[in-house]
Amino acid sequence: MKSIAIMRPAGYLEESIKLARSAGFNVIAVPMIDVLDKTDSNFGGFVERIMGGEVDYVIFTSANGVEFTLLKLDDPSEFIEQLNKTDVVAIGPKTENALLKNGVRVSMIPGSYSSQGLVDHLTGIEGKVIEIARSSHGAPELVKGLLDKGAVVHETQVYQIITPRDERHRKLLEQVLSGEIDIFAFTSSMMVRNFMAIADEMGIKEKIIRIMNEKTIAAIGKPTAETLSGFGVRVGVMPERYTFEELLRECREHDC
Image 1 (cartoon, helix red, strand yellow):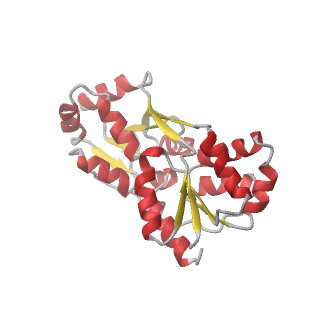
Image 2 (cartoon, rainbow, N blue to C red):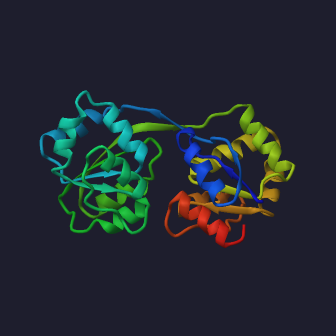
């Protein structure tokens, strides 16, 4: 049985472990990134414009973005009622499920679950007011792409991504050195950077990269794959649909 390293945020680990085990993998799980609530100076305007009926589209780029947005509100039901008068856009099925679970109607999902996919999907938006609720590390391509299409764009950062460092992470790197990991599943650029930063602090980064290039590296999304390539790591699996389930399926199909 092949061993897969899963490094997703703590809130996703339990489900990810179940999925990987059901796909036939032995799992080594350590969160390489985590999420915390954040309220920036733009959040008040975001709520006011939606409540005032001034918004055409509202984009959510993750399930976390949905949950952290609603957690900040004293009366989410009133906000959701107004939100449903706009075209709500979800980046993918997980985000859609989080919205539907909270009573929000989803108008559209792009064919490609990415920032570029959202930009390509939204047409005829010149002069339209678009609100984006996402993390503090959202890809700049989304805002730029929508602005280039003539939209009026506002962004609020409703949560932040942090990079934890403790004994679990050092142990994971030691397991890499001892050859215990066959597959590395990276789901974000920040995850890659924290992994490499810890390896660098331990003085083993070059050795880790050499070992990784003898194993299977799976990445969700082009930005993640490009970050890995920037460190000299070859990516062997990158699913067309940017979901963890698809990543596992492709690993299995590629006989990882």
